[in-house]
Image (cartoon, rainbow, N blue to C red; front, side):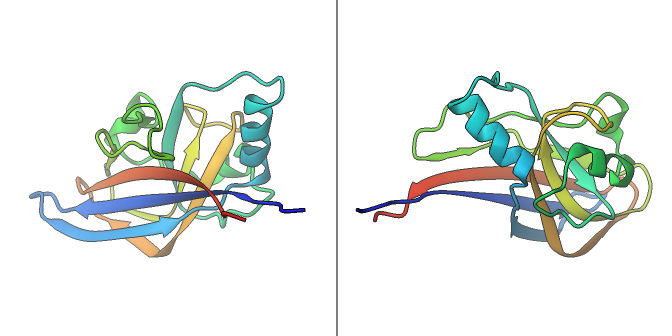
Length: 168
C-alpha cells in the first residue's frame, strides 16, 4: 500500500521600515499550525463546519505558540500598539484563488505602524478582527529573535501558505 502525505507549509515574510522608509530588517519564519487550525481546515473542507472568509494578521509579544495554543491563550499577549488596530487587526487579503498550490497576500500585505516603542516576538494568522478570546487561530510563528520597533516604524507581514504531496 502506497500512502502519500499532504504537506502544508506556512511562512511569514516580514519587513521592518524606519520612519523615513528605509528597510531596517527583513526576515522570514515558518509557522506552527496549532490543533485548532488543523481541525478547522479539516472540518471546513470535509466536515460540516462553515468556511471562514475573513482572516486577519496579528502580533504577539509574550507567548510561545504550541499545538494546544488557542485564541484564549493569545488574548493577554497580543501587541496592539499600532495605528491600524484603532479599527481592527489588518485583514489578510489574498491575491486570489490558489493557482500553483500556493496562496499569499503579497499584493496586499498586512502593515503595522507602531504608536509606541514595542517588542514583537510572534506573528499570528487568525479569524477574528478584534482582540479577544474567540475565533480560530490558524497559524502562529516565533520570530528567530525579538523585534523591537520604534514609534512610527512599520512592520509589513506577508503570509504564504503552500500545499504539496510528498510524491509517495
